Image (tube, rainbow, N blue to C red; front, side):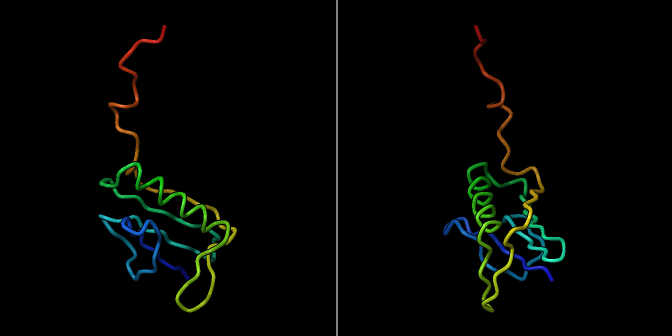
Length: 100
């Protein structure tokens, strides 16, 4: 059974959801059978938001996520990040100055 979490940018934390996919928010699927956390990051998400959600997800791999029913899921799972949202912009990848 998989548990789906949606990242709330205003609260900077994950919350349970019934959605399995989204085009505008970061979703985290906790797959207990494969022992994996799969975080999907849409294109329109900024780098700071992505990094914050990734830190939260790594915390879930350490201590788990407490569900509404009282169970704790996600502990000792592997984190996998999908999607290209939140990447460093191309204009910041190259230095405008030459290295001496």
